[in-house]
Amino acid sequence: MTSLTAAGIEDQLNQDTRKLIALDVDGTLVDHDGRMSEAVREAAELARRSGHELVVSTGRSYGAALPIVERLGIDKGYCVCSNGAVTLRIDASSPERWSVVDRVVFDPQPALDALRRELPTAKFALEDADGRFLSSERFQDASFGAEAEAVDFEHMRRAKAVRVVVFSTDSTAEEFGEAVGAIGLHGVTYSVGWTAWLDIAAAGVSKASALEQVRRRLDIDPADTVALGDGRNDIEMLGWAARGVAMGGSPPEVLEAADEVTGTVHEDGAAAVLRSLVPANLGRG
Image (tube, rainbow, N blue to C red):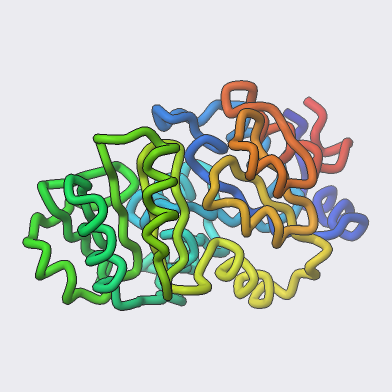
């Protein structure tokens, strides 16, 4: 990798426009076993050293998102978590290292009641307003970033939610998606995952809504936004960005929402996109 002097970087930044680069995590930066390739990590480092703002934008809760931020070497900026319901400010020089700058909560009771009625065997988990996870049937997932506390359904119904997760082991992703669509959830934003998995947030909340607030905080022109993702929860984000890039192998509706398609996570598609944003003389080595 080319060794860069501070003066060289400054000269280059005077020639190139700083961009906000929104990066999904699972299936984009890391594979589904949680592995990040060295090519992705190095490309992210080059993009950061080129002056771009890398913003991890994920469905994961913050406890599971922060390790990705650290692996990318991001020590200052923002991180969008819980599909846009929680936004963190990152500052590694401060004692706390990060803080919550925005958290959007909603009443989950109507959605929970409708889902339980139609999907009685599904498992439920809820991220509450204090960042804790409540779950039914000891439902646990790495994306929670915290140990879920088993509670009864009534307790969950009374909580104020940031994020609700529903998982079914009795149906395929397609069958689950059809069932959820037939329920007709109102007053919330939701997306169905690769498996029989449902993420629910407050109405109007998405990665895109949170990223727009981050863009304004950073004073970056809308034309200088890039987003990269692979899931249905990335569709709004890809449409929001001036350059929306879908990972290879994404669902058809995700591919349709994107301006272009890169390689799969196993082909280091994210690294290719990040390197395309790095001036040629900085990317040699």
